[in-house]
Length: 356
Image 1: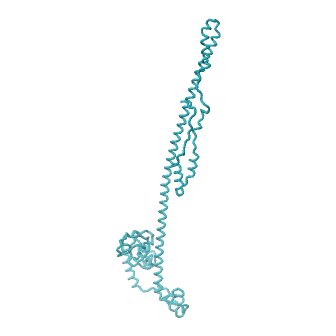
Image 2: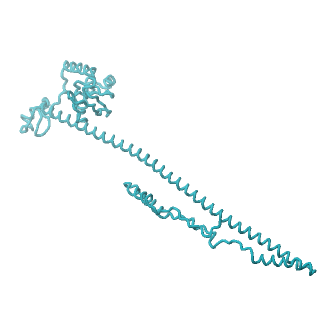
Image 3: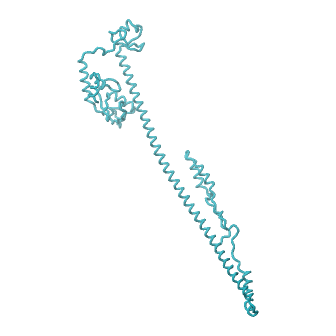
């Protein structure tokens, strides 16, 4: 507490000092003040015990045979959370400095004469102090108002007794409100923790989901490469077969062309004897070339690649049907895919008329 600066600012040092010595719970001057660690604010021990008990209703208390680990509550001044050991409020250190200041203050106040106006006076009877409480009208008043004034027919009670009763009631209300605030703060803390855990869980699930989809992407890429390689291999085999046929037919064509040229040259031979020496063999070769050499051919549709066709409609439908929900639907779809013996991702027809 900065008593010095407060006293300088106020024109009445004693009155300002009294304000510094008021408990924020009971609004009375401290009795056996304690230090609430670590914020260093002060409370009456009883007030501290009340809010501690309100915040920790199941705490056993001092002298119990049951060993407790302690409890916690919040400082009513700064809302700092105070964690207690198993001794509870009795484990807090007393503020002897504040106690000594209170003793000195009380001695000083008792030695000073009562200042005029320190006690509230009745507005109807200016010389009469307000010393009773009208229970009927629920207002403080003076004795003259009860005997001769507006409260003559009202029921009254000593001011001090009503003062103590309402003070106790207000103190209980404050304790109840402080306890309620602590419960609200606890709920807020739990909700904040829930937000944090929700974010962490969401991040973890996103990571796991991304890893699973990355695995699916890798499988699809691997399957794609495999199928493309098979198509390329089939293409090479067919082209190799066709190119071999082209080569064979080209060789036959070249041979026939040369034979035609030779035959034409023989027709130009003027000598009969010379012509007859080669004509018979030449005619035989031409006949054999015309009949002979039956080369291979490609069957109809040989060049088609339609049998390399994927039927992924049911797979696409299953992927579109995936829904997180309670997790049941996705599990059912995965079981359907994994358990089906008739699911073929690739249907390849056998090559008809394939030539090795």
